[in-house]
Image (tube, rainbow, N blue to C red; front, side):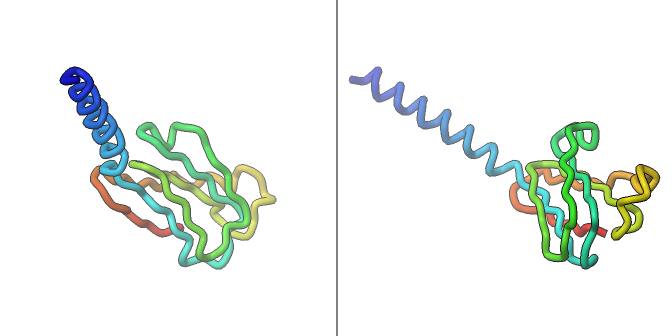
Length: 110
């Protein structure tokens, strides 16, 4: 019985620590609050962002947001309403934000 109690205690502590570390990591939220509509936004996330997989979002309207744990990077077409002119519109640099502690760090799509 004593061994079983110790096992449950160890399992409970391990689970608490695993779930707690995700909750303590914090989030970064990108919010579209200044532009009425952006034809295309690219988002990357994770410790190696922007050198990670790219998520593409089209027709991003005012009020849109996306959250990622720890680090989020984005870029958008230099002309928000013109995605037809090819990759030259995507010469904008990545804008990134990080959150190292608990809570949400919010930044604006500009």
